[in-house]
Image 1 (cartoon, one colour):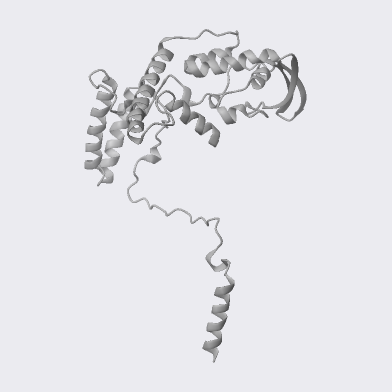
Image 2 (cartoon, rainbow, N blue to C red):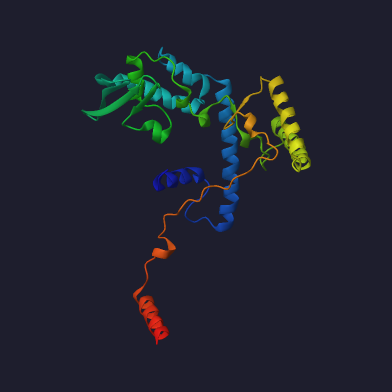
Length: 289
């Protein structure tokens, strides 16, 4: 994120709460109000995403794929790119092995004038990897209209999971939403109350079992058995599968990380100032006398 983008994001966060004449004391109070409002808006948005469905605007299956998993706000951005496909003309250029190259020409209207912009899309059929020179996915995390146009031509109905980012999924349980905050009423937030109860119990058990490898291994086996018996547990954002190698292996040697040389000038090759050079020469001359 650039400096300008960070500044715009900060201005949007405090919009309506602070101004150029705001004192430090008022800023602290208004910051608390702004943060509280942000939490309320996020809670309402999450509720709407889980209980309201925005209808698709095209019959393409990849649009339905994003409709099923993305929040409403992010799905609207996807729909904007899907709509933009009608302004794009795609022409196959070449194919080398499993990689196909397409020229995509997008017509953009600016007042009474129509401007045509050229983009290049590369599609790897073996890995189902697709990239566009506009780099919208790399910068904003959503696929562009040029990629969707190529998907239409290549009859790609379902996109790989790597193009669906966890940060905008509505079917994942976010860790931070379960953490108690000053704006929560635990009587109304049952999830936070249960989360706090489980965390306290696990922290107590972790303290008791951590001194022994045998106790840790036994505890991990109990957790694995619990996870196996309750396969219907909801997904968690950023969660990863626990492998057997993650269980503590008694007597296993832990190696130190490799030493990485920094980018700075090595100590023996540092640039010596002229004054220091003269002093060193004078010192050596005196020692030789």
